[in-house]
Amino acid sequence: MANSKRTLFLKRRLRVRNKLRKVNAGRMRLSVHRSNKNISVQLIDDVNGRTLAAASTLEKDLGVVGKNNIEAATKVGVAIAERARKAGVEEAYFDRGGFLFHGKVKAVADAAREGGLKI
Image (cartoon, rainbow, N blue to C red; front, side, top):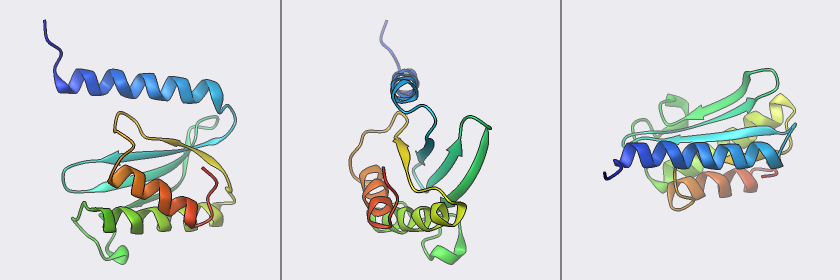
């Protein structure tokens, strides 16, 4: 029986997240989600179960509403790095979920690093 793309994605997401949890205990998690139309990023404290900062292309002040390209991903990465500094977070681990570390997902990570967030 062939696996669907969705089940393969979910298996990959769990595999990535579980490996990261073992290695990065106690650090904040920078979780990225990419859809066909938008990209969003959250800085999550897994110990307390709280989202400390978030950025998305749905926000009007970033100027990339409804866009999902590398330029929009870079703006979201810079915004999350700035908001993380305001929240007092200097380092986090990057949770790519089930997405490949390529293109838009990589652009978010690189922009967050350039913004001062240690990933």
